[in-house]
Amino acid sequence: MPPLPALLPLLLLPPLLLLLLCPRLPRAEPLAYPAVISPQDPTLLIGSSLVATCTVSPDFHLKAEDLYWTLNGRRLPAASYAALGPTTLSVALARLNGSRQQSGDNLVCHSRDGGILAGSCLYVGLPPEKPVNITCWSKNMKDLTCKWAPGTEGETFLHTNYTLKYKLRWYGRDNTCQEYHTAGPYSCHIPKDLALFTPYEIWVEASNRLGVAVSDVVMLDILDVVTTDPPSDVHVSRVGDLEDQLSVRWSSPPALKDFLFQAKYQIQYRVEDSSEWKVGWHHTPVAGLVRDARQRCHLLPPQVVDDVGNQTSCRLAGLRPGTVYFVQVRCNPFGIYGSKKAGIWSDWSNPTAASTPRSERVAGGCDPKGGEQNTTLRRELKQFFGWVKKHAYGCSNLGIKLYDQWRVWLQKSHKTRNQVGKEPFALLFPWRGGGGGCRVISPHPGDAAGHTRMR
Image (cartoon, rainbow, N blue to C red; front, side):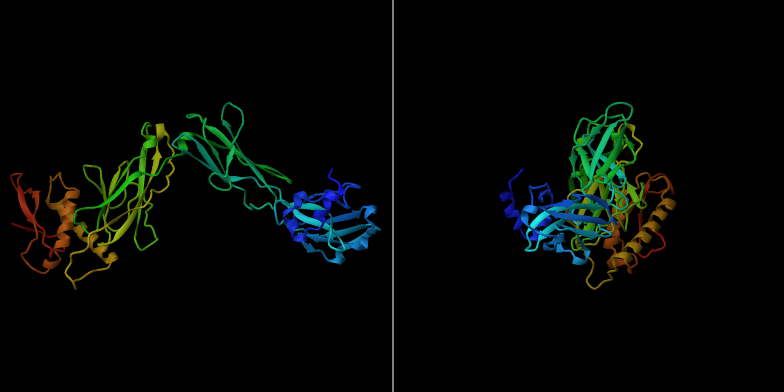
């Protein structure tokens, strides 16, 4: 027990400093401190009322009328006081709000000159709610991280401990997670010693001065919640002279190369002067998505690529000429060792930039807006491929090469749209008209309905 002289420096502290000293306020014991506060450090529900008393030791020759109270540094009104004896002063607190700090509110008894005689911490709050929304993921099947929400209300105004526990479903003892706040305020990380092919039971316990609450038990298999690192070696490059396209290539996640799994990839992109990323939420197969024999995907205008399958390259189309684009890719490993779950998306890769070629259109010519260009192009492509289906029976090599030729022709035909008989180049197809040979078929830019000249 410290001697009374050791207490004197504390008596001279400004009242506002007590907001940081609640756990260290002088504890009331007879003859050891100037006064005793009762009750000492109570825990109360929000809305409760409290009557506290301050009794001064006779050795200090102080009377009840020489005393006053503060709460968190603010002097309480004299109307709430009552003298219960020559050296005892009480204070009545009604309908208490939640504590301003989790370490407790400071209720302090002072002498007339402002000296501190005794103090008590008031813990006013709510019991914890049952934690909800437990979600977990495993990075490359090497660890497990879980997050949860503290309940519908969340704030208890009291220090609340959260403990994540787990065990193998059919046997084993309870284990307690040790690494908290690794992925946010309500999270915990289990770094190792996890079993595969066996489900776990996982739950969270919340406790504070007013009670304990336990979440529902979540059952999961590590193989069902696997995520991985963002795709590496992302490269974005031009597609020849095509002014509205970029090619994207990347590497599959190396950490999972020794495991049996599939992967979905998603791409998002933005222009240099915008912070808005464009990304779609379609399911495979994507409308407008064409795959050639090399299993690369090429997105016809106007939008984005999503769920491009177990591939590591893709082509973006319908872009603006002469524009810098930033591209990111992410990966979703699924079906690991036959798991039926959907998988969890990785973080996005670091942005990679590339620019589309500048347009070579004649100055002053018609330059439709992006939306109009995309609509026109989609209509022309639909007409063209419709004609191919009708007139090129038996052709087995129609693919992205044909599409590239058609796009080059579209870009180079602006000068000749209204000139009859001028054809930029010819496309070769097997002609079903006879002999299995090829006839030269030249699409004319003026044939908007899909009619084609032959020679």
